Amino acid sequence: MYNRRKFIGSAAALGIIGLLPSKIVSAGKRKPFLSKANKFPIILSTWSHGIVANAESMRLLENGASVLDAVEKGVMIPEGDPKNHSVGLGGIPDRDGKVTLDASIMDSEGNAGGVCFLEDIVHPVSVARMVMEKTPHVLLAGKGALQFALENGFKREKLLTPESKKVWEQMIKRKNYEPRINWEEKHNDFHDTIGLLAIDGSADMAGACTTSGLGGKVRGRVGDSPIIGAGLFVDNEIGAATATGMGELVMKTLGSFLVVEFMRKGASPQEACEKAILRIVDKVVGHEKYQIGFIALNKKGETGAYSLQPGFNYALSANGENVLINADSYFRK
Ligand code: SD4
Image 1 (cartoon, rainbow, N blue to C red):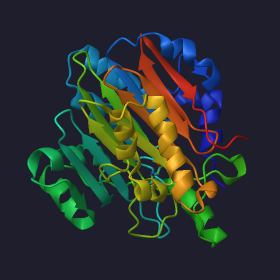
Image 2: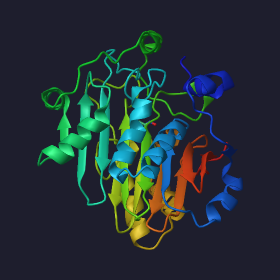
Image 3: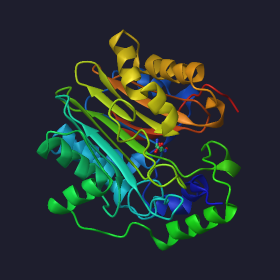
């Protein structure tokens, strides 16, 4: 079975795709880094592909780009990387062998845009931004989203690479359709969304979230990532959150909105992520079979992350560092 963890785990592969973080910190050891007052800007994003995305976002912010540009252009790096099999080009296809993409974006004014079930476009996050900026709508789906993208100058491209096709061929040989959690090596799945949150020098926030979704999903399935409040939420007065993992659990609890609402009531980003995971544990039957990870950021520049299962990590750029941090989790190995 295809194993993304193994792929990104080898030093050689990390070198090739430029994912080497300056250091990797485990949850228990991350306090000294996080307890410093983080200097703005701050960027955090899900999984190890967040390292390259953060680096690009930070470069842009340091060169005076808007926080919205920074989040969009940051996640475009994994979207455009054919070796990344969970986002954009080269994403793992659905059960019928078609790569279908979901993405969303939110700015500091509360504007939001998304696309879902989008085919043949490498950068769904940019189409999501265009939905936000050029239409009175929030979400475009499927053929309509593709038509809108083509009308607005996006190029149609084949997203299934020989490598992602091979993974799909292996997958359909199994015949038993069963989405899997991503924490167990032998049960590694194909869903590793990038959700990226940023706060700039003026304490303005934005976020973006983009994914090829759950590998082997039923055709037409849409996850949490393009749904504002589920996969992503930004409230510039309070904070921002984004989610990764089995989207159905996040959608049932409107996870990212929930994290921000906990922060509104006074929880730190860390507490808010933990409470949102506890809500899933409390309310979603069968949650123990799946992985969910949340990351969050508040107006003060404090950050947090928590997951249902062990194995979730996120990239944090602040204070001149860009590090990969292993998040703490509800279940322990
Ligand atoms: C989805 N939440 O489509 C996405 C997948 C994901 O890490 O986050 N993978 O359900």
